Length: 232
Image (cartoon, rainbow, N blue to C red):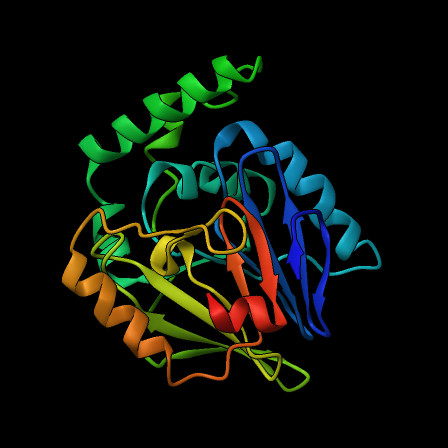
């Protein structure tokens, strides 16, 4: 099944969709959210997220798959909205997010997208540059324990970019891996996405073949379940 809209993916995972992105909400005793999207869709994301924890609590972890501008654009707004949320990423992503020149370019791209989507950039560049410190660095095989028997395992998956990291949710066996698994455009229509290295991209795919993957989150195209996930 190809799930394009917001809704339930598995027992402990929900999907949040915007006009330009798809995200996983992973719910244990604590809640984690994968990637922050672009700045322009933050309000869409937060309105759906708040409905998940309307009975109390909040967002404990924001898991970043890689540092491309369309995956980090909401980080400063999450910082302002929920100062206790921990930003989690690979060491490579954490290093990129210390580069002020890179962050200024990411701010410019997000500002352009705000203009294209008819909304105002809600944060100054000065404030933006102050918001990208990573609180928790994960290495390959490290896990975040969300309680109630639910954990998220980090898997380094270079290829799309050198800092790509996937997040494998257990016991649900669903994977959110950024563009490390390429793009899906319908049956038999699969695209590769190796902006950093084709060889690394293939090695990362091989690495995932050993997992029992029952669902795949695609950051710009919803989720695949069942046979579609395995075939992909």
